[in-house]
Amino acid sequence: MNLEQELKRYLGFDTFRMGQKEVIETVLSGEDVFAMLPTGMGKTVCYQLSGYLLDGLVVIVSPLLSLMQDQVERMRAYGEKRAVALNSFLSTAEKNEILAHLSAYKFVFLSPEMLASEGVRTAFLREKIGLFVIDEAHCISQWGHDFRPDYLFLGEFREKAGKPTTMVLTATATKRVRADILEQLDLSGIKEIIYSVNRPNISFRVEKFAAKREKEEALLDLVEKLATPGIIYFSSKRLAEETAHILRREKGRRAAYYHGDMEPLDRILIQEQFVSGQLDLICATSAFGMGIDKADIRFVIHYHLPADLEAYMQEVGRAGRDGLASVAILLYANGDEVLRRQLADRDLPDPNLLQLPENLKETLPEAEKRFLNYFLRSGLAEAEIRERIEKRRLVKQENLEALLGFIQTEDCRRVYLMRYFGENDFSETGGEGCCDNDAASLEPFLRQEEERDTVSSSSFRERLHDLLLE
Ligand SMILES: [Zn+2]
Image 1 (tube, rainbow, N blue to C red):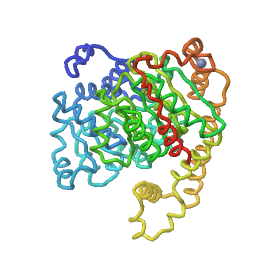
Image 2: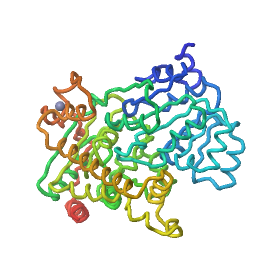
Image 3: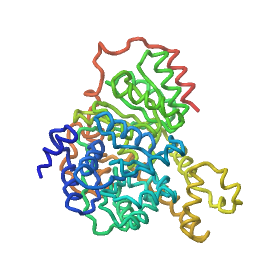
Image 4: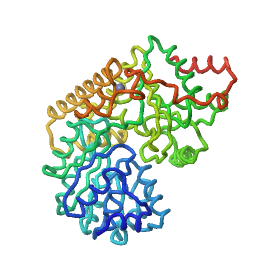
């Protein structure tokens, strides 16, 4: 079989991107595969094309509702009507209708939480599954930043389904997280296809400040100077919103905000406007970016610290997918780690929740309910659960230390990142354009003078200052 021809026939592309062909060849030969491809290298092509070339249903487990919906819509747009997403946007009647006619579909996307429900599992176990895809598999690892307890039941489901050919896809993950994924899924001996996390066209910079006030001014200057499109990441939804409003109203910039509390339709609208070039700047939380297919993003700024270096690589990896020079700038003011530590603690479940009476457990927020269900189903004793939560807290602490090390290092930042991910070939590091510690200049990333907004609005500076100084 000529895979290039099949690629053209089914998906309309002429050539494969790095890693895709190897992944597809592996599953076509009936072997399971674990793939970590550089961000933006088109993981979806891997399971779409494999799915067409294999008999049976393709089941894709994905953690994000918006991402699933987006993928289904894209597949429909190119004429694939047998794709569907089973998610909470559907009514019970609609969901049951799909489950009763699963064999009419080729590609079914669903969340791990959905697959954990008994009725849904039973319906899938009746079908012939040609390919079982676990996307964003780092969510299975308790050492990763996106831990989702329901991912832990995927191994059990796979076993019950008769171990269909499995494709495990993950974004940037450390060796420890990768080993954990394979252990949790009971997939030892699987073929691993691991590519370097390095993206040579992204230049790394960290700017350090003694106080917040200086950091705000730096953000302001940068946004004014840098060529767009660009993304500015915040930890605070409110700050993302307000900065976007100011950039829009007072600077006349084409800016918008994006975070997880927005209505799904609003989020899709903002994404589309950004992708189609109607917006130049997005002020966002980490909810923004997965599944965004925009090749020409020129910069990613972190105003607050990212969750950890895995999250950081994913977020900066959204820049420069067209291969052109792009820049990642992390702004750090003394004490920024305090906020990050608070956010990390907030993500950990409170073990005291286990004592709640049944009727009150039902009223908990979704994330905490999930944790409780996971612990209850896992049959662990309370002491063990407490121990696990504590261990997770320690891992988060270590991850934060590694992130602070990246900020403080005086050596090549790219080497630091690659080392963190367990790599040891540093031939593509150093030199012009690598990072600020290698004396890379910001000059190539600046807007041309005539494009620049010459109005220097002092009121804008003051207002932004009021907002940023919390
Ligand atoms: Zn460097």
